[in-house]
Image 1: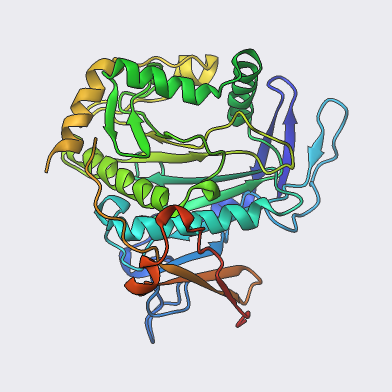
Image 2: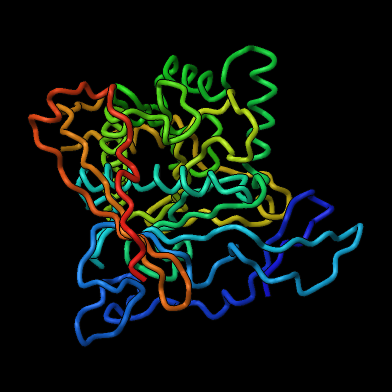
Length: 325
Length: 60
């Protein structure tokens, strides 16, 4: 059973997807569904003995191109909708035991080209309002497969957190004529204390308002509203800055750091979004090597984040790890 | 600022789409590095994404 159920208290959709209870959970390495299929061996999701980058529709999708009808009847209070959309898996490499941080800048650049392709294709679909590209990395985040991969959700609505950011950005644009993230970037550059790394086209910083100790934003210096608007030079520089940041994250505590990586860009619902600036957000749950930031009472119940650290102290630590040769 | 090297030529991306037995789409992305001479004739900021440069027919 799968459907969208309206939450009138918060004014947002909940996606139900009961079939996901059956999805593959931390299989042994020789039964990884994201590895290439070797002759005579277990048949994986990918019917080839080797590959570069592969994208396929999720076997256990939360959203489907042809969704089932809702299993319950809606009402004025509780509207329901079919869970229409697309859920894709992006397999970064055919090597099981690696991470994006361990991959070359060239592979990251190829991945960026794949992201561009997926954004363009999925965003062009009539039913898709928002293309969300992300990666859940590490068991601390709840990954069920260790093979390096990301995901794409093409939603039939603008997700609530994105909608809230859009509203803030729209108000700022109306008031000042400038994009909000551009002003945040300028403020971070003026201050300098929270900058982690930088190149000609991108700046990485722990934002003034960070909710997680080592949360970072990767922000382009030129305002573009979607990943497809970068030129080749910028795509190369994005690959380079991601490599620097990911390697720095792994040096931070001396192990491959779990994180959520989220790409934020303009919706694809046919409206105009001149106030949007593309960015990538990293949310690592670790606050120390052994301690995690949990979304507990204040965060989950009230929506108010408590950060046990201050960005002016965490950013220099991460910066030192990124500068290390 | 992090040092950046000379921008190497961007690879050309091609796609091969197959339909799995259960009807799901799967796309193989492959990349070919353009020759240096061909790339030298273009400035990086003139380049547009090579995405979807070639769409092979469905094999499934």
